[in-house]
Image 1 (spheres, rainbow, N blue to C red):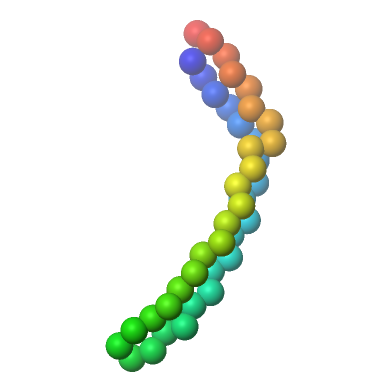
Image 2: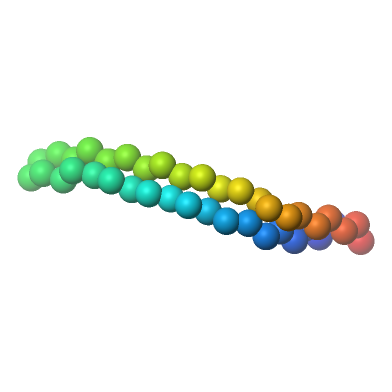
Length: 40
């Protein structure tokens, strides 16, 4: 089986980095807009 898809991804990262510690967060969105399945 072959799968082809077209989509988009949006991602953002924010963080605070200090001498001995850090805090970070990541937020993302992923969307497959069109998918084509073909059986071989």
